[in-house]
Amino acid sequence: MSEPATGPAFQPLGPDDPATVAGYRLAARLGAGGMGKVYLSHTPGGRPVAIKVIRPEFAEDSEFRRRFRQEVHAAQRVQGLYTAPVIDSDTDGPTPWLATAYVPGPTLAAAVAESGALPPRTVLMLVAGITEALQVIHGAGIEHRDLKPSNVLLASDGPRVIDFGIARAADTTSLTASGVSVGTPSFMSPEQAADREVGTATDVFALGLIAAFAALGTSLYGDGPSHAVLYRIVHEEPELTGLSEELRPLVTRCLAKDPAQRPSLTEILELCRGAADQTQLRRPEDWLPQRVAAGLARRPSVPAPVAGHAAAGTHPVTAPDYRIAPPAYQPTAPARPVSGAGPATAPPAYQPAPGPVPVAPGGPYGGAPAGPYGAPFGAYPAQPPQPQPPSASSGRRAGIVVASVFGGLLLLAGCGALVNLLGDGGRSGAAPGSGGSAAATGTAQSGGAQPSGGAQQPRTDPKPAQYQGFQLPTGYHLEFGDDPLQPRDSNFDDLYFSCSSVNDCTLGAYGSKLVVLDGSEKGSLATCRSATRFTTRVPVASLSKGTELCVRTKAGNIALVTYGGASAPSDPSTYITVDVTVWRGAVRGD
Image (cartoon, rainbow, N blue to C red; front, side, top):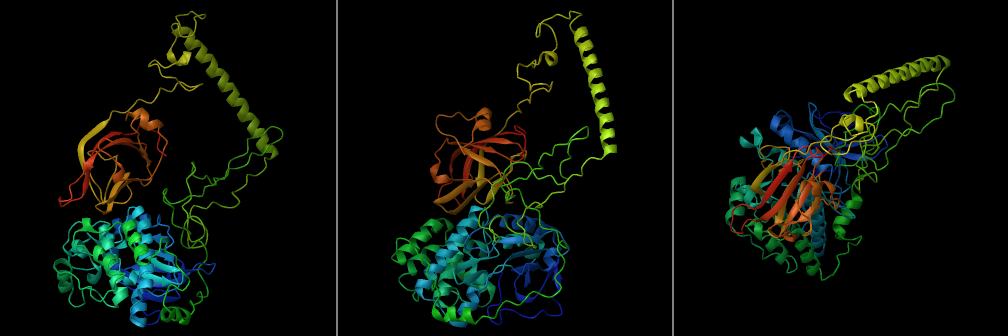
């Protein structure tokens, strides 16, 4: 979380600041921004965390609440070396908030204000680190939208990007519509300033502005009234004469007015390597100039936890989204033999969710993101409740129950024999399948095989819903349960399309299973049911017209997506055209 551009890193709490937030006792104030205030707190184990409390006027807006919930849950999926992970949140309480790992370092804004512009070598390392952070953020289907010097922290081992995606929550609320600004004008892209469609290329433009700011020590488009700054961003070319030869090509390409002309994140890393005259960027321990590193050494120690920390359990740990990371190990209750008559050992009261799900790497506690009390999200009790040994009275009761059940089974068997006899016309010796019912013979009338020992009819294949020539714009998503199918701008749907540049577009899936069919496979419901070459991201550049993709969703829907091509570079909108066939409820939901 960000801190002021100047002034002390840890400010004492004021009369308007709360003493606690959902069980976290606040030790200091770190700063404030357009959407709220940021505080320092600690877990009971002493680990510092930064807590951002949302302004009351945003909390009262229902549309902001909806988007904030989506963006926070999406941000919890982001686990990168150059990001500060979101480890806890409350998006539904009276005052929304989120907590991230605390990064011991100043913001880029504060470092430049105190120590001046950074040398080109440091700027290249800074840009490369931010670019890697954006790769992880965009890979989760998120645009930062508010990338600026106060949202970049400088740590001894590299930069950290914070507050990714949160600004999107305020984009279409009644507050922003009435003139409340969340972004920083000096670091907005032309499409943001002109209120046009915003995509991942917006973050590339902001990255160019950050590189120029770090190298020059001032905003490239100047300061002053916001409308004047935004006008210059949209209509004027920046003055880059003060930039070094190493940085000028990189900044020039990032600041292209047309989003389609900006470089991809992969290209930016290549530009950084070329400017540094290295085939592989290596970040030394002294990547920061001495004056900034000395400032890090002089920074005051993190304040100690406030005495009387709220007891564990005051705030329930945020429930993990199924896309984040339940633990890979799914505990089960061990079987316990019971001598003599008595009931089978009861399972533990706590039932873990079925199905193995990969653990997201890189969380602050070594695996999945952690909650406020030190345990990883989704962790199960180390010792589940143990069943009590059966007593003598329980054994007698169990014997009666067993005898009753056995007698009932005999009665049902007799009734079944009578029904078979009547259905067979009294021919008790009829061969199976010669005239008896399908249930009695164990075969379905439709010809499908039945599970042994049951008369359940087979699942009927759902009727397909077809959408020909469907156009999906960048930054939007599909939910295959929707009928009719419509592009969505939320973060939790089945298939998304995003671009960081005209040559770097991706089709991806969040919780869905995505498979690209090869030329020998015929796209069908049966093929999509059986295909298992799962992936989460497919570069659009690797697709040719007619390529088929299968998508199997958590809700049990199956979609066959046929790629039809992309929009022309001259088109004002970036989109792809696809034919979509959806079989809703085709498989059991995960």
